[in-house]
Length: 124
Image 1 (cartoon, rainbow, N blue to C red):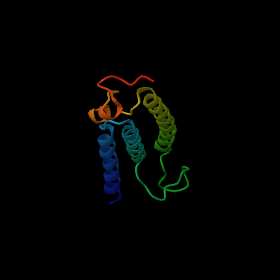
Image 2: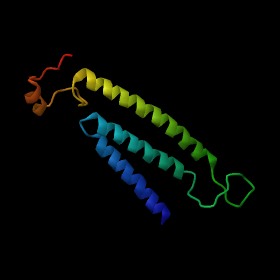
Image 3: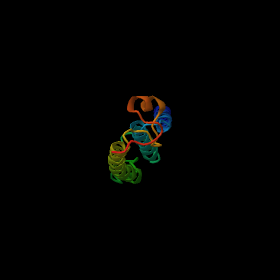
């Protein structure tokens, strides 16, 4: 039962992350990448077998918790946080330079009417 719910949670995070990555604006893409990293972290954590009441030290009980997936997930969390901060700063810089937050840098048709631009980039 627990393995099924865990697999469903990983699948849901993966599907939501991929859906958000396919958006045209930068903030949903950053959230989608973060959700995908959470899904990968949960998958790595489950690779050490899902056990309850497992001792962290060998010899304390019959079952023990595997420390390698826990160390990998902890490292992935730190690296993922740093990369998310970098991507957010990069997106803020792109927004300031381009005047919009679209990934491809083009001005969409509804924004052209408002800004007076006709297919060219806004020069700051």
